[in-house]
Image (cartoon, rainbow, N blue to C red; front, side, top):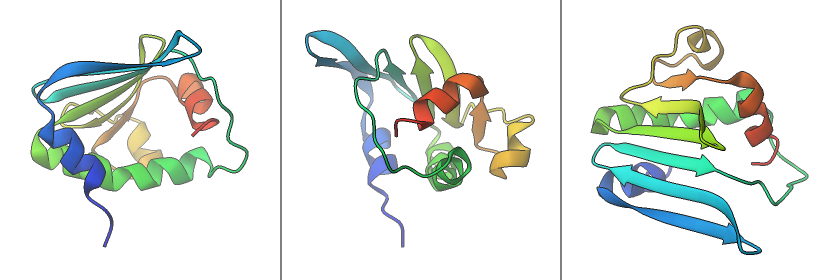
Length: 120
């Protein structure tokens, strides 16, 4: 059984914001307003050497996206203010459905998504 912590955590948050800084510079901001949750990656100050590929990461995100949709929540991932990925309720997959095999994941900018997945 997979861990429900990410979806439980996101569904329990209703309103607020959180900012993370690295070397006194903004790195990540998180905000939520009812069913909308936004993670904005402002700067990527780290590199991780061993990481799964983008397809593997998206397939692992399928379960989270499905749970978020079931809870009526949308998680929007941004890079420097531009939407890159949507998971959950408001996701409109279009062509991404072919890659992700999910109705709950929308890829808005593949080039920026690749930048993010090269780190995580």
